[in-house]
Image (tube, rainbow over all chains, first blue to last red):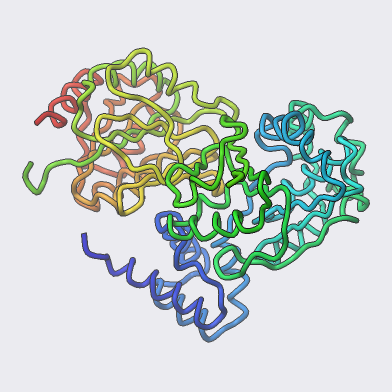
Length: 274
Length: 191
């Protein structure tokens, strides 16, 4: 089928966003981008995607709003507890053999996955030898991650998830309630480096022993998934670990041979020894 | 196949979904000619229960897709709990954690709208029983793209709100019994 007018408008807007502001969404999975740009158009009050593009080009203040629509910020602490249990029981024993560790949370959004990993490593006695890189392209999300404040009504789910993940303490040990929010203990951030990094345009920046990147690649098309997985391959030493989301797979990737399934049902992979 | 022939089926259901689908899905043969994508509203922690349940009852293959998996004929794909399911233009399936729609993730509107974009007139949209409004907008998108629209007869539905909302949004949709929907879908998927 030939592209509809709306599809053409969307591709042009993504091109404008890239050329003017260097945010590159051109290789994101199209169906979801389309949905979110339709939402942005409705809520920002533009008649067409084209007129929204003109607004974006001439008014830089629109940029963070649009980035907010285009990047997804929905997560939970210890989402899919069985994933974190597998990290704790099956991956941590290997991490323990390294004198110093680096862990990369790629696409950390507002920080829920990051703090889950910091708490897990602390409970396993590994935090003090670990440096955490938390990266995202969304500055607002990074600021939220660095602040570490979540609404109090979400803590019940987070606490239950943490317990199911094999947590060795109570999640309430790590936060205090203040003004309707749960403020995570700032000691959880002392070994974290927050950084603006794009899986689309930036290069690998460090060798890390574990990469956790859950439900980020689902927003990419297959070429971009291959690029990101290539970055991950290049960032891991032999036998380094990669954790993906529960419905993400290396099956359709060019890099599938570079990794072995380590915990198959949790989508935890290990870089091969080749 | 002529140019108007269907290339895919999407189905949405909520309250009463298991009973309704138990009439429809077992009627489809193992060599069914179309892919079938389904959203049922399920709680976030009920992973893969539906796919496992229907795989036991059905000749056709039933499972949850992985991200970017090509939608293949002869397979029923249930949206995984806590993910939206979308169809890309190249016929691959995408998953997403975008915010819930109508308090639901997965959402029927999200699947139907993306499938309408991907398949245009070559899509059959079927909306079944349910107690909310999800799916009405999506079914309207299917109709708008020239696809075929079918709604479970509200008088026979376990919960009538969803089929009624869909008929209000798509006055030209056909209201059928579950048996007629099953027979129709079985018929269109034959060579």
